[in-house]
Structure formats: structure tokens, C-alpha cells
Image (cartoon, rainbow, N blue to C red):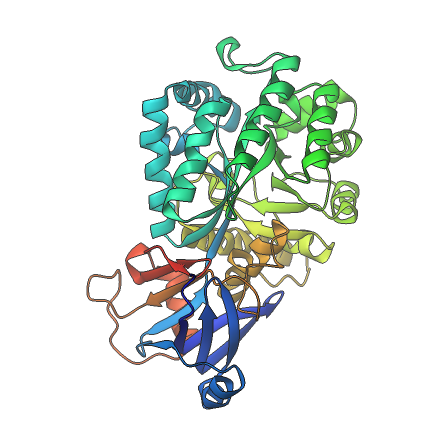
Length: 440
């Protein structure tokens, strides 16, 4: 029989109740039964809720003054099989980095034992950094990609796991034929769905448009439609890449994906650094989203993505670490890089007499939580603390002794959030919950 205990968390609660709007309960509570949120309100109303909801078997957790309860962090773009290379090759531009470091590493994931070692580490490490939901690129090899799914299930992480599709412009021993890429993807999807996991699902994953012919992309889009799956890929990360897309397909990047039927309301496009106004409009109209990967964009010298421009055009945006182009598994690092990128853009914009207000710590908190959920079309179940949503959450403590900064005077809840965004790390995340279950 399922545990009927209602867990009640009392203290400083912070979430986004709508885009780019942070809402705080300085003395609040959240009641959770199983995986779902039963109630959220000011603590003064707790007695009323206990009576109205008939709560008898309860367990109360009282947060310290130095702690805040926030939604789980969402990584909308991460390459799990690149984790061993983290911090390596960041002196190279994108395409050279792929050939020198990335493809040789990904080929190793044909080996079951090595895959198990890495994927186990990736899931544990991301959870400890507060990533309750991860949108994973895996490798070309469907059988070992299932090991990543099993690791997420084992440790209780919410995840989308994608088998990469490539039939050209990669090493000859790291390619599939057009027939294999579709057949192997169907086999991978069916094996994933057979696991019957509520948390871990397959996602269609064409690497990028240069990796496939139009016919293959269309067949992958058909699979997404048949199984009602998410789609993830890259778009406009690098000027050289964009030029090759034009030469090969004779049209802009977004138009290629539109023709292939890959732009859907469940599509997440990583990077989006070099998009025309027409492409941005097309993405917005399709309902597709963008994963902003600021650390990777800077490390590989790709460029600066203007998140404000995307948002103003109606495009949903989340944050991605893009490991190992990104230097850290932590979405906190992505938040800081997003602020830095936006401030850098503002210097140029303001020189042109434009009024440009860069992203601040509260904006990137939204992108890392509710924004990420919206970008992955999962905001009906996660992203903030609403009744009937799943309880994916972190307890953050900025007063821990072994932390990155000393806690020398009392702070308001919003000041604690500021400190977490700017200087926090995994040591400050003292508890992690996914679907109501404590996983750290």
C-alpha cells in the first residue's frame, strides 16, 4: 500500500508563478502526498488546510532561516557521453573540437562496461548539483543508451534520453546507414517504452541538419509523431555550420527543420546563436523552444545568444549545460554564464542607443526552473510549486559550514536566492526531491 504520509515543508519558499516573475512565501508551507503537491500557502493557513484536507498522518520539516525551498533545476541540453571530456578541448572551435575530442570519445560507448561507468557517474553527479530533470543526448549506440536510462531510473532522476542519429559528416566508424538510423531508433524507442517508467522517456535526437539527409529527418519526425515523443537537435551554433547548411540545403537552418517536420511544440533546439528574424518567427509560430547554452557558446567561441530577443519574439527558452562544450554539469554555472552573456550583449546594444535590460539573477532562476519546464513542454507537471504538480524540489542552505561562502548575517529569502545563483554550488544543495522522493 502506498505511503499516505503527508510531508509538510515549512519555511522560505521561492518559485516562479509565471514567466520571469519570482514569488516568495517568507513563512510558507508546501504539503506533499506521494509525488504530488496537495497545497501551498502561508504557514498561518496550515491549520485550516489540515482540517479541510483531513490531514492526520503528517511529517513536518522545518527549514532553517538560512534555507530556501525552490523547484528542481532543469537541464534542457546535456551530452551524457561527453562527460569524461569535461574541461578538455575548450581551446578549439566547434567543428575542430568535435573531430578531435568528441567523436573519438563517443565511439567508446559501444562498450557496455565503460558506458555503465560513465552514465552512472553522470546521473549521480547531476542530481547532486540539483538537476532533477535532464534532457540527454546519448550516443549512436541504442543498446548502451538504455544503460543511461536505467541509471536515471535507478537514482530517481527525471530524464529524456535520446539515441543520436548521424548518417554523414562524422567518422566512418561512427555512422549508420539511412536504413539503420531509422530502424535502430524505432528499436530504441520500443525498448525505452517497455521500461514503463513514469520519469524516463525517449526523445528523437537527430544530431544536427548536417548529419542527415532530408528524407531521414522526415522519417525521424514520423517516429516522433507516431509515438508522441519530444525532439531535440542543434541549430545555428556556429557561423561555419550555418554556411554549410545553406550550401547543402539552399535554405536557412530553421527552414530545413520546418520542411523536415521537426519543428513541433515538443521540440527543443540547442544554441540558436545565429538566427534571422524570419527564423526566430518561424520557431515561435511552430511552438518549438530553445535551449540556451551560454557556457558552451563562449568556450567554443561560437557566439552570444540573445535570449531577450528570443523571448520577446515569443520563443520559450530554457538553460542547458551542454557538457562537455559546457565546462560544468551545474545549471548554477549556466545561470551565471547566461547573466554574463546578456550583460556583454547589453554593452553593444546600449552603444547603439537601444534600451536593453540584461538578464538578472531572478530571470535566470526562471529559465532554470519554470522556463526549462516550458521549453521541454513539461510545465503541466513540473517547474514550480502548483497544486497537483509533481514535487521536484531542492532545499538550499547558504549557511552550511563547508560551503563556498560564509553566512555572516541574516538574509531575506530573495537575498538567499541571489547568493545561491551567484556563488552557490552543490554543497549548498542539502536535499533533492524528484516526484516526491528524496534522492539526495
